[in-house]
Each structure stands twice: as C-alpha cells, then as structure tokens.
Length: 114
Length: 115
Image (cartoon, rainbow over the protein chains, first blue to last red):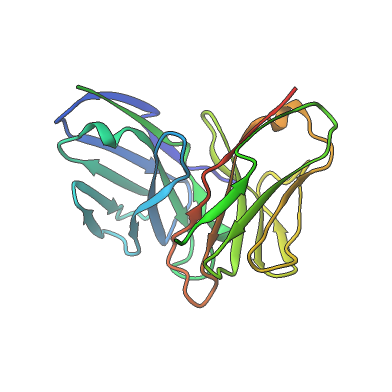
C-alpha cells in the first residue's frame, strides 16, 4: 500500500522555537489529517483539512492543505515540552466515507530541549 | 468515558504460540481497524471492519486474522507468530459512513515481542 513521506523524520528544537513539518504524496487526497502520538499512548487527532488551500488552526498549531492536494504542512508556534511526541499526517481520497482508505505518513519525531 | 481498550498492553511470546490481542470500544462505532507501528514505517493497516461480520484486508494482513462477531469487539489473532510480527499494535475505531469525519479513536497500544 501507499505511504506518505513526512519530513523531517526527527527534530530537536529548543523550547519557544517554532516548528514546521510537511507531508507529501504521489496521489491526490481530498482529506488531510494530522495526528499526534504522545509517548506510550495512541495517536490523537489534532487537525482535519477538507479543502485544497485550507488553513486551519488549533491553538498553537496551524495546518494547511496544499493547493496541489498532494501535500500538507503543520506548524507549531512557541513550542513547549508537552509538544514532544510523534506527529503523523494521514490522507485519504474521499471527503466522506470510512477510514478504510486512510493512509498514514512515516511520522516526525519531535523532541524539545529546555 | 469514551475509549478503545486493548489487552494485553505488553506481551512477550515465542514463535508459533497462538495469541489474541483483544480490542473493545464503547462508542457504538461501526468501523474498527488494526494497525501496526514500526520505526520508520509509520502506521500500516492490517485489517479493518466496516460493521459486524464484515471484515477486509488492509495493507499488511499476512499472518493475522480478525473477527467481528459483536459491534464493540474486534480481536486480532496471530495463529503462529513469527519474529517479524514483533511490533506495536493499535486498534482504532470511528463512526461509519453516516458520520465519518476523518477522526479515528485509537487504543493505547499493545507492544508484542516474538522470540
């Protein structure tokens, strides 16, 4: 099955810094999602995007649905220690339906130093 | 509290010894799925179920079986585990066709080691 490429694979940043990560696909998606996995936990949905060009925020997090529909970006502003974890992008070709066609990215591991 | 519960959370077993990882959700979700997480590979879907008695293969189904006899339960069965099935496994559920928004609810994970 297809996998999405996430970049970077891992990053160390200092508390207070802004973070950017992205996800690219060879296929067009009509839904992009960003999940976060805290250490020892299962992933939790952060942001869902349903329209090309859409920019959505959730607190310090902002995600964008790329115009080409083949990529998405996640930014975290003013990082704090609890931002530590693995961030997964996920995409699917439909706006509705089920999660059966959801494809996950390879993940970006974020570590924050004080 | 709405949740997806997996058991066991940790398991060490030996090659060939059949095991079952249970998954239960209390949200009346129609859709359930199993994923495995491996370093550098992200989350890969093993099997999914659209509703009771309806299951289908995901991207990496070899060596696994599932069943969906009740809406709330979706056990993952490894009939003859092998070392390449050592992984972190996640069960997830979501609303079905009528209300799906993209959100999957994940369990806390089951870390399996096959020696």
